[in-house]
Length: 254
Image 1 (cartoon, rainbow, N blue to C red):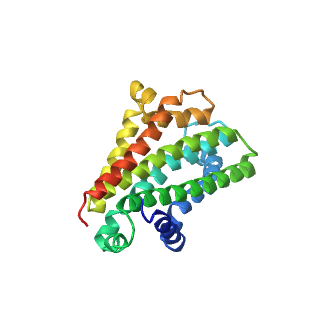
Image 2 (cartoon, rainbow, N blue to C red; image 1 turned 90 degrees about the vertical axis):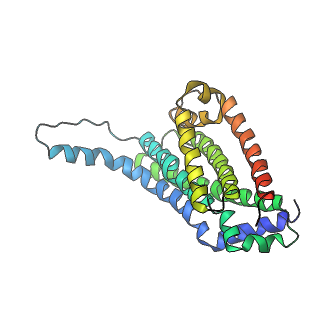
Image 3 (cartoon, rainbow, N blue to C red; image 1 turned 60 degrees about the vertical axis):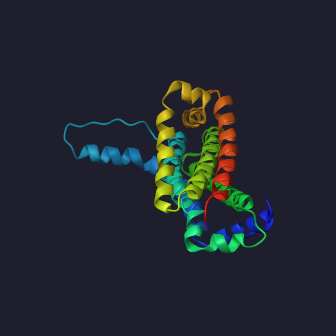
C-alpha cells in the first residue's frame, strides 16, 4: 500500500475541483428537494387527468410524509445507482486509456494503493452526498407535510448506502478488468439488474446481500426484517470485491 495516503488526498482534491463533485451529490439533492413536492402534487395531477375523462372517478388518499420518503428511495434505487454505475465505469479504465495511470504508477505508488484509494474516495463522496440529500429530503418533507417516520427513512437510506458501496466496489473491479468504459458499464448494469432479480427469490434474499433490496422497503415501512445475513454478506462481498479488484489490476498491462 505504498503511497496510499498521498494518492487518496489527490483523489479527494480532484473530486473537489472537477465535475465529480456535482453529479451524484446534485442528483441526491435534487431528489431530496423534489420528492416531497412530487408526493404532494401527484394526487391532484391524477384527479385532474381523471376529470377530463367523463365517468372516470379515481379516489386517491391524501399524500403523507411517507409518500415523500417512498419517492426519495425510488430515486435512489433507480437514478442514483445508475449514476454510480456510469461514474464508476471509467474510474480505472479511463485513467488507463488517458495514460494517467502509468504516470501515477511510475511514482512510489503501489497498484493496491491506487485501487483502494479509488474505492475509498468514491465511498466518501457517496456517503457525504447521501447524508446531504437525506437531510434535504427530511427538511423539505417537514415543510410540506410536517414530519413523518424519520427513523424509517434513515434506516432505509443506511441499507441503501451499503448496497451502493458494494456497487462501487463492483464497478471498480469491472473498470479494472475491462479497458472499455462501455464494457465496464455493461457489466455493472448486469450486476445491478441481476441482484434486483435475485432479491425476489426467497433463499437468496434471506441469506445473501440481495436481501438488502427488500430490507430497504421493510425499513421504510417499519417492518421487522432479518438483517444479519444480508448485511454480513454485503460486508464480506465488499472486502472480497476490493481484494479481487486489486488482484485483477495487478495483472493488467498498462
